[in-house]
Picture (cartoon, rainbow, N blue to C red):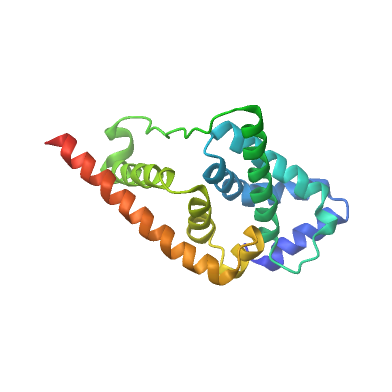
Length: 190
């Protein structure tokens, strides 16, 4: 959806049309959850952070001035909520964990292409879990949420040139992790 259309929805919400915020949730729920999950690495906590992010966005909608894209503003809220959740969990003594997504059904249900896509996605998820949370977050924002370097700078507070360098390093580390996972997989088959 174009930014102009999103700004129209935001304007409706600011004018008191509460139900218009449902459109915002529908547009961004997947990206917000994925960003939170990449940082927190726990499904339940990520769901909680995503919900909390939308509540905070709704409560603070009048403070959104449109100086940046709405998605950037929303991702910044999510990013900060995620970091706060990690801090809270560490204070409570919780350990971070990654829930592996399982493929449901059988090959006949999904077809061979879906199975291969799911396996590829699973390897990427496992590799992402082996790099630092910050690198994971940067890759998620850049590739999955399609944020440009300026938006990532606004969301994370990391300078644009530093983001560029860290993205490069993160891609290299991800590549190394993928190669190692695939090597281990091949060795287990032999």
